[in-house]
Length: 309
Image (cartoon, rainbow, N blue to C red; front, top):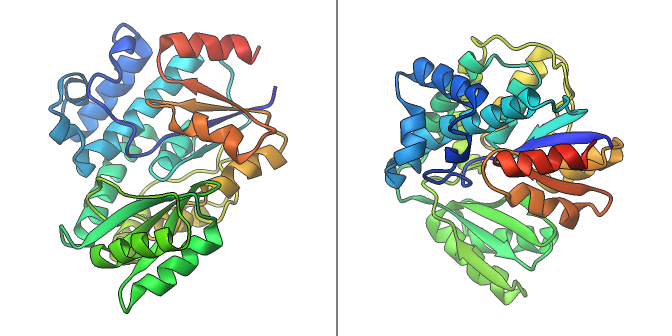
């Protein structure tokens, strides 16, 4: 089996999500490094909450990076082999870049906290929103956004699965977009509990700040090919990797294309590495050639190890 690992982003976090790994030294070591880098006890935050603090973007992003990479280290420590390719959904792309040797983990932790702050500050609280549109194809969602904009911003920003698209922008425009999408045949339109219109063009200020910060971060050529979100491309030039990462903040996550790219490259198994099972569940919906696995706790890790032997 040719295996790829994919890493989840913001939204898969929950208090207690890493407790099954409490006795795994590799996992605890990763959390210790992250806690030291931030001057904050991330293990305690994940174990005890409170949920409001864990769900704050400035905490969620470094926590999900740390949790995903910690599970990856547990996989390697259990005898798992390096994957042939990696990718990550939104924030998860940073975890993929750490796993591929592009970013040093100690550098990546403060980097994603900076990213979180920049994204949060780009749009005043309450002015932006995101919503999931279910049961409508990509072009119909884009057309609904064009109709609903009325001088404001509302855009398709996450192409998560066939007929599962997230829109983002000004709150009023997103609400209009939900109504238009329903009138065009969407089965559901659901407002998401997020604090900013992530990946919309409203986050261009965040992308600019991120580009400046990334210019000071050591970026190396990947040891494992990484399929990026913004261009659905595998880059080896550190300058192009930095550019793609900064643009990702204000451009759509093309997840359907990313997963199909893995299949086109000969990948047959895709393992979601980290808390949650959202990406694993989407894999076969996106590409029937692929088998999806979850590596979220010691039990699923062992099942995945047996499956890919």
